[in-house]
Amino acid sequence: MQLSTTLQYAREPRATAAQAVAMERAGLDAAWVAEAYGFDAPTLMGFLAARTERLLIGSGIINVYSRTPALLAQTAAGIDALSEGRALLGLGVSGPQVVEGWHGLPYDKPLARTRESVAVVRAVLRREVLAYEGRTVAVPLPPERGTGLGKPLKMLTRPVRTDIPVFLAALGNRNVRLTAEIAQGWLTFLYLPERAKDVWGGALAEGRAERAADLGGLQVVAGGILALGEDRAALRDLARPQLALYIGGMGARGKNFYHRLVSHYGYEKEAETIQDLYLAGRKREAEAAVPDDLIDRVNLLGPEGYVRERVAAYRESGVTMLNVEPAPGSDAVALVEKVRGWL
Image 1 (cartoon, one colour):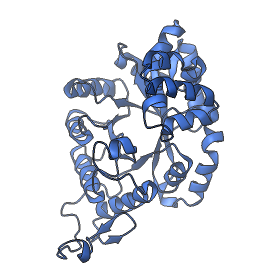
Image 2 (spheres, one colour; image 1 turned 60 degrees about the vertical axis):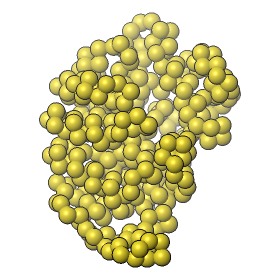
Image 3 (cartoon, rainbow, N blue to C red; image 1 turned 180 degrees about the vertical axis):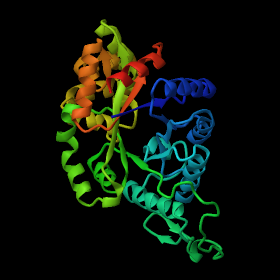
Image 4 (cartoon, rainbow, N blue to C red; image 1 turned 90 degrees about the vertical axis):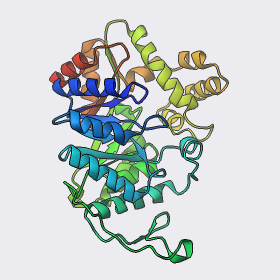
């Protein structure tokens, strides 16, 4: 099992990069660079490519609405060239609050847009003459929608790799099914190992049944906040703000993917309470309402022996890359080194 972390976009980027370099030396295999509506991901990814030697550098995630598929391919190829073949292209659909509220684009046909974006990215990386007509992507632009001067082109430069791995962020069954069908890897969040098969098993099986053999096995990236210690209550408090935010406030009522997922896990009443409190502006109460059991099961918090058991549970459920988020204030490098020793 490989070991990765998600770099926090809210931090000063040079400090973030310096920490990634130190974690690489401690045994980290991959770093995922987040992008929401702060700094863009590719800038830091390019900086990391120059500062690191073996670290895999992934976007975690870039949404498929705000950049054209051709630009996604150009970006992935550029970072792959700078890193000498260490790029991972993490894509997702984000959500309507970001896509419409920040980028000013309609949040429509997410499954079709994902499938077609991936198809175009791969065609560009293979340096094919680009001509694609889909439901959400049309290149060249049809004459009736533009000047009529567009013509099929192929990438000018030669990518280091013609098949940069694509990882898709997915939670819902249809997205997970698509991921298992077309992607090299699956980026998860709030992943509960013991319930993964119950929630996603059918979707994964359906997708794998349509999967091309040359994609290999589906890589699964999952994990959570990491901290070691005996004070379980204090450690849980480190995770409460994040869980309350995602379950309660990351999306409008009825459009919150994380709320829906936690409900599927069996915490439906608790999820409703958290959302009601969060949307009413009572964030501290929402945090207090997050069940201890849920915190323990979707994170890596507690005494060393317990956390090692949780790592084993992730492995047993099919996770191939353990994604850890060292808790604020912890010695991230030391934690990475310790977990690396367990793997």
